[in-house]
Length: 420
RNA sequence: GGGGGAGUGUCCCGAGUGGCAAAGGGGGCGGACUGUAAAUCCGCUGGCUUAGCCUUCGUAGGUUCGAGUCCUACCUCCCCCA
Image (cartoon, rainbow, N blue to C red; front, side, top):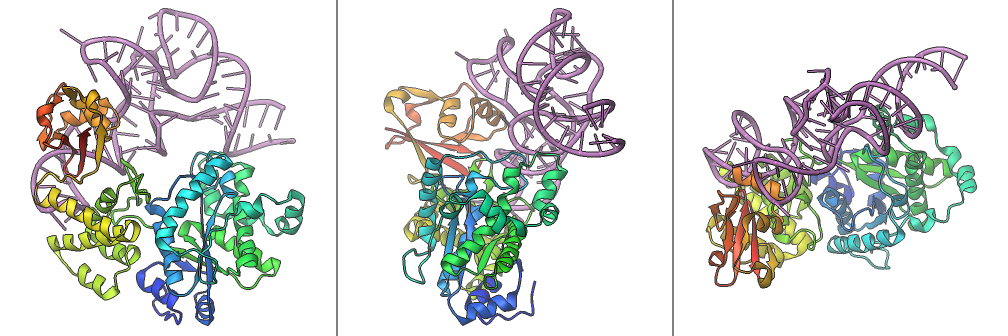
C-alpha cells in the first residue's frame, strides 16, 4: 500500500519500511502529527491469559518502535473489557474471569512488555493503563446519555466481527455487543488522560478503532487516528503461533527460550525476510543481504532470525545458548545437555520406566494413546533409536553418566528426561 | 403467539437406512523426500491397566436386546406467518 507515500516522521518511516502498516485513517495527517512532536499511541491487549504469545508480538513491536522514535507507547490492559468479551468471531463467548485472575494475568503480561518498552513517569516513558480504571466506574444511565447516543446500531451490525457471528448462527449476547462501544470509549478516555491520538491494532480491529475515531469527533476531542497492521499468517496461510504443542508463549516459564528459538528457526523460506523486518531490529540493508541468500543458504538467515528474535525477548545470552544447543543437536548430532528437560525423581524412575509413560511425562505426547500411535508411525525415539515396541521400557542403562535420557518426537522435538 | 428447519468426534466444516468409536474434507502430528523450508506422496488424528474395557453426536428423560438415528420436555440458532 501507499507506495508513493514518503513519511517525514521517523515513526511512520520505520513502520512503512518494515511492513507494519496495513491501513491508516489518514497517513499524511498522522505523519504531520508525529513529525511535529511526541506522539502518544495505544494498543489494547486483553488479559485473558497469564502471558502473551507471538500473535501479539507484532503489536508489541509497533509500540517498541514508537518509543524508539520518540513517541510514548500506551499498552492498554483490557481489565474492564476482559469482563465483557470480544465478538471476535469465536464461537464461544469468552469465559468471564475474576478480578484476581485478571490481576495475575496483567502481572505476567507486564513482564513481557518490560523486555520491549521502557516504563516510567516521564513524558517519553510507556504506561500501562487498565480500562477497568474508568469502565468499572461508569454509570449506565450517564453512559447511555453521553456516549451511547453516538453509536449507530445500523453501523455496528454492518461490521465484519458482528456479521460473521450472526451469519454463523451463533449467539451474540448484548454484553459482547457492547464491547466495541467500550473500546471506542477507551480511545476517548486515553485521549483525555494521556493526549493519545492514535490507536493501533491488527487489521481485524479496524472497525473497532474507527468507531473510536468517530466517537472522539462527536465528543469533540482533537483529531484521532487509526493504524492497523497486516494479519500475519505464514506464507502457506497458517495462522501464526498456533502449533499442536500449544501457543508460542512469550514467557520463558511457559515456553523455553530454546523452543522459542526453534519456532523462528523453523520459519518457511518465504517468510524469512518479512519476519526479519517485523520481529528483529536488524538494519534493513542487513536484512536485504540475508534475504538474498538462496537455497539451503537461507538457513543461515533463519538462524539469524531465530537468534535476533530470541535475543529481543529473552536476552542475548539465552539466544546464544539456544543457538548452541541447536547446533549440537542438529548439526553435530551430539547430545546437548542444555536441551529442555523434565525432571523425574529417582525413586519414581526406579529400575526403569515404560516408554509410553516416559513420553507422556516428557510432554511430547498428550496421552499414552497418542504415544502408541506415534510408535506405530515411527515417530518416537529414545537416544535417537526408534521405539518399535509399545511395551518397551527405558532402563538405567539408557541413562548417560549425568543421568539423562533423550526422548524425541519426530526429528525436531527433543526433551531430556533427567533422573534426580 | 403460530408454522417449518437446525444443533454431530470440545480445532473447524460436514455425511450419517436403529447395530456407530460414527463417511469425507480442512487443520494438526508422524513417516518418505529435502535444507530443522515449501510442494508432493503415505500413515495417524476419543481415553485407558489395549486380543479387552470405558466415554462421545445441544440438555434431561423415555421406547428398544440395542438410539447420533424413534418419542417427550427443555435450551440455543435460522426461516416464514402474526
